[in-house]
Structure formats: C-alpha cells, structure tokens
Length: 245
Image (tube, rainbow, N blue to C red; front, side, top):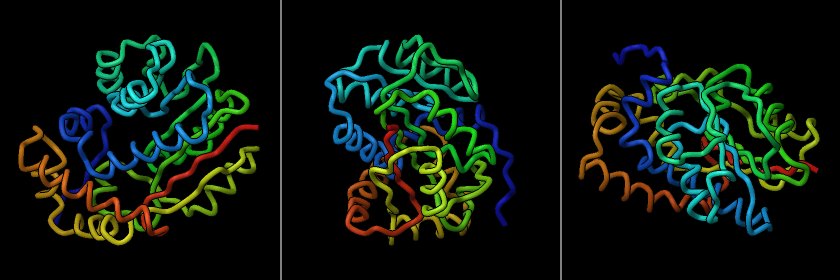
C-alpha cells in the first residue's frame, strides 16, 4: 500500500522542480492559457499576474510569448523556495511570497493554475483575483474535477469541483464566462487511475528528481498524444476563462 503524504509546498517544489515543467498536463495547461490570452486580450502590451506561480515557468512563457517586460508580470506563492526561484528566473518586482499580497496596481490578466483544489479557502482566492483584476481584464482558472487519486493526495488536494458550481460561483461575483470546458478524457483520466497502482514507483521514477532522457521522451510522447483531448469536452481537467465587466 502507498504511504500517506503530508503536503509541504517547499518540499514539493524541491522534489519536482526539475521535471515539473515537462509534465504533459502542465504543458497543455500552459498551452491553453497562452491561447486564451492571445484570443481574449487585444492590447499588444498587457500585465499578467499568476496566483500560485510556483517556480515561475508559466509566467516565463507568458513573458516570452507576448514580449512583456519584468514590470508587466507578477505572481505570488506560499512556497518561499518556489517564489525565490521564480525571482531568479524573472527578476520582476511583483513576485511575492504571500497568500493574499497587496499589489501596487490591478492587472489585465490573472491566472490561477491548479491551486483551488489545494485549499478550502478557494472562494477567498477567487475574490482576491476579482478585486485585483482590471475592469475588462481576463481571469483564467484551471483546476480538477472528479475523484481524488493518489497523485492528487500527494500534492495536497482538499477537494475537486463540479464545473457547473465553479462557473456559478464566478458568475455570482460578476464575471462573464468566456469559456468553460472539461478536458482529459480518455487518456488523462486513465493516467489518473493508474497512479493509484503503486504510486510510490511513479512518484520516484517520473514526478520527482532529475529530468532524465527517459522521462523527457515519455513526457513528450504523452504530450503529443494528449492533444486528442482538445476534441473531447470531458475529463478531470477544468478550464475556465472569464472577463471582469
């Protein structure tokens, strides 16, 4: 039987930092966010903030994709280790080790990628995002639905969501839903169930440690195969894009 895990953000990032940006689902979430920003933000230059930014790989991709300066990007995370690494990578004055930081100004886009499922205070996070989003700005949320699996317990999930209920919560705040969809059936769904079988082996060989050539090949093949999920509006992944009036 796999052991029980006590989630510690600093320990998690220390264990997974090398491999995390290459996880196939992480790459697909990034692809979804970049595509949504391109579609829904018309200004050639905009500001972007990532709530739960981790080591900053998503912000780095946003910066590179849209040619943003250090002043135009920001993020926060409860992991001091992750925030420090993000600062090393991005050198932005708006990277903060805090849960609900006080920002110098509102942002044109605020993302929250795989954070809500980690805390029962998810409504407070969404409210903070709304309050720090410019009028006309875009909010992008990704999270999980369905059963909580071994890989989810490892990363400290406290609950998963029903997309209808999450959408309703955002609408009650006054947001206009631009897109809300499920993603990941059948292959990502199967992957999540397979993690319940000898998860410790999967954790040691793929999730943690140095990015080996074998890992990179497996992750890359899975990434390209998982493009199939774009065609099927079902699965354990929730993607939502909303606009503040």
